[in-house]
Image 1 (cartoon, rainbow, N blue to C red):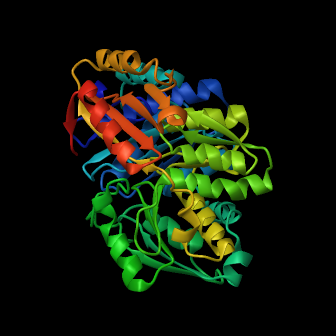
Image 2 (image 1 turned 120 degrees about the horizontal axis):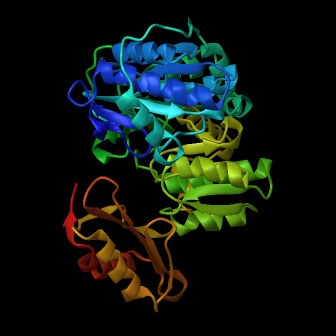
Image 3 (image 1 turned 45 degrees about the horizontal axis):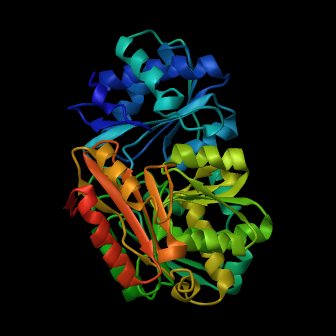
Length: 458
């Protein structure tokens, strides 16, 4: 088995080159022993729409059963469905067969423990790797398997976040790009039927053929072109594009302009803080300064997090966070087991827009008040040395913290701040810089760039 498929937060590879069906069964054996040692209950298994997913899921289940685990097979679902199912049936954990936003030749496994707590390298995935390498295939099934349809219960759960009275009073037309992936199954089952005031215009919902109109990654601007065009042509109030397993989404406004996920986090936090005054809101440390400012203005407690769903979910639980958001399009909800959900994010945005009574662009314009560079990559063969130079260069100009990479904050004195993080998988440094003015933003990017290496535009 190719050990490279074990990443920091999940298991992922190219089928069948680095991830094949034997590997899936061995991973099943390892997950089965790991999860059942730590908690009682069955293990939930779901899968996405990829052509390789049925076979991989079948062999994964064979491995889980060989390890003595009982399995609840929820079938072809989005990743947040598995999060819900784990909690709904009181499972010991779950495994979702998916490669998220990667191209169709990829596949993999997302592993969760009790309560759908994520299992990453530091919380058990390393143990699973070691056990999978030692496991064998073809073991006799010991545990049971039960296929369960939980769509009605899942839809009811998601729709608790939808203000149906607000939509009835102020109708909203949303164009949804399912990326030829699992949102094409989820949106009709959750948001279909008779929701007064809600009109959904679907694009790229077909997900049976394995053909993608674009890669299922809404963070790449080119992948939003279909959505932007459709919103303008069809007169949508907004558009929503989901990734492959529908745990992430990106929004465009009524003019087709892409909405930064940090700006969306700031806007949505107001509604959650009205319901839970003084609560914590957790946000990705790359986010605009406006996020912290808006949370405080709404009476909440802003909590900065390292980048990544493992860290976000942990802080949500530790700090009692009511809501959280990342630049990557993950949005987290206390009342969704402190986990992320693309479906609930869509429900929340629709509800907030219905209550606002004005176009989305007008709602967000006051929040998008600073100039952002976006993430810029630099090739660096000695990332640690480059970060040390950044610390030394700016130590006397502002504050520096190392929660995740190096953050230099000169916002009060000079009107800018920046975060520089190391890539986990490539010789790259990633720069995000924000300033009070576009001129300052551009000049500071030019000043810092030579310290980081060769700029890589991709």
